[in-house]
Image (cartoon, rainbow, N blue to C red; front, side, top):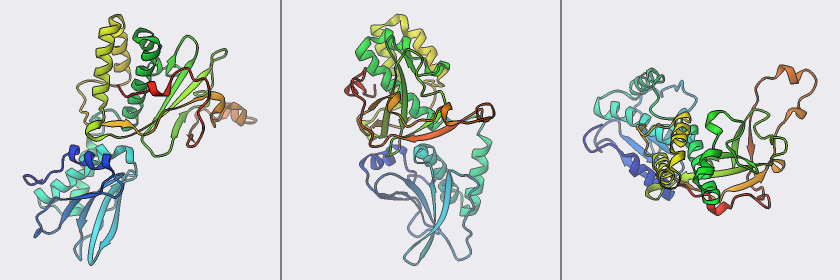
Length: 323
């Protein structure tokens, strides 16, 4: 991109966190085509807008997460490039910035700039820039739960109970109960469930689920790196014998302090704590006949929006704060 024409993620995140729409011109007013970076109304989406000439083709996106559509602004015909996955906005920002750089800084047509960027990013898929968005959000949710459990039971017990990244059935195993943590960045409490057993309680042990909703926090939010380091600092101070175990669990979850990380998050709503019996879930009783033997993997999405919290929860919702 030409000098001074880039848009930093920090600036974009400011408007997203405020829910404000704005438009960043990336090309000179007299340039053709005109290119602009847009934070759309409500601060829930971003897009790249590029003027289309009479003979310009609208690029065809081979990516299910990227949509290219034609829009009109008065007499102007424009292409709008946006994402179908709001939780991927940080990564999408880098993607459209690369397209804009090829158009504004290197004189490419939109069609060529889009194709070159897709090819370049596809070549890098074996070396992802960081944890996948879903894993970043999930790990931040588990650190939030870890912080809450530490406030209740102490850091040594909390770290010892954190077993989700190491492949155990549930995310946390406390002396009196198990806890599963589900975290989403959507406006509704929609959570993916992996398998028919994930929400089954262990015999003789109650299972609770914590539903967390995150939203982009701007300068007042916390990054995953900041949260992980805050937890490490607290464990080093209050339960130093548990630090090696914590570091092993973080590494198993895929986190490293060397990974780039500038997304800031805050809690959108108060956590929702539910017993397993209050959850809308599937189990083997929903399968009949040979289905028990022939269906080997199930994944579904449950929507917990509007469900009242279960009474007598083992942790206080107010204790769930992003560390």
